[in-house]
Length: 103
Image 1: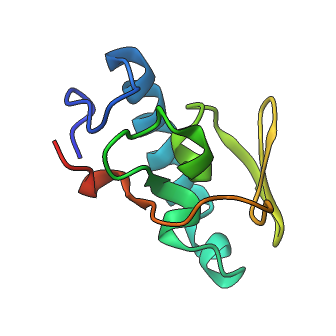
Image 2: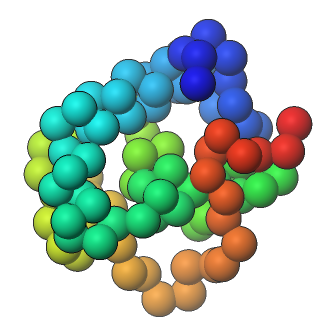
Image 3: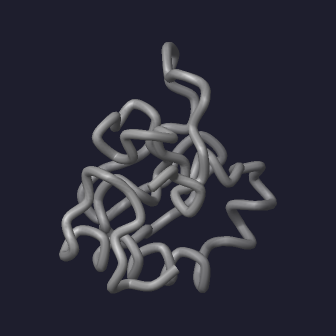
């Protein structure tokens, strides 16, 4: 994915560049560990299939903030300013990877 092409609704060009950079950093430093802990593509990079990040309740950990990951655990991912919990009751089904959003 190109950092210059916003892939889905709800992201600004600057926001997408931050998410893109943080995602590359995550893949370089934490992807193996996340995979070993069972994190899925949708839990990391999922978005609403039509509304992208506008529906934040569909979003995976890596598409919400553009913050760098500092630690990956079985139940959550720690970012610089917050945490993303893997299992949140009521999280809707039907997310798609950010690269599969209908444009």
